Length: 190
Image 1 (cartoon, rainbow, N blue to C red):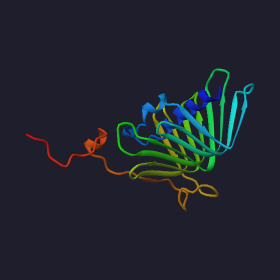
Image 2 (cartoon, rainbow, N blue to C red):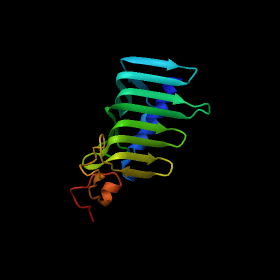
Image 3 (cartoon, rainbow, N blue to C red):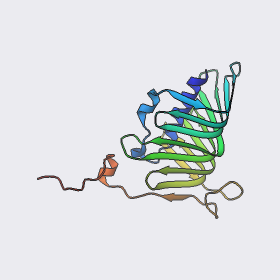
């Protein structure tokens, strides 16, 4: 059960790190083998739950997830759910059809396979290389609706900003950036 669960968790995590349309995650990763390393692993087939603890590293193609603990479960209908906890938990993946990577980090990252929802909790941050970034206490991405939410928050563990506000840096895009290609240094021949 657990390799399939991890595959769904990783595929869902890929969807979470989209900052905008051109930032799509590397599609080819879904067909790559999943590699997992941890200090301990516990599998409860009766409860359909797997727990990986201690320096957890999961990779699948260009996708990597690092966490202190990853818990994956499957409901009776086959929907997958996963939680990665760390200080911080970090996911990173190459962008589809573009240079650079998408990186997300938070104290806790959760994936709901039934709703195709990824949530980053406490000191949440998404970065699209080279320079787009959004930070808040909570970040949510629904891959079905492509709806993205960032919420600030003050208090212990918030980390968005001293005032608890959302912080975003979004670089201007050119037409060639939107197509996922680097701008040409030479003008086209006429």
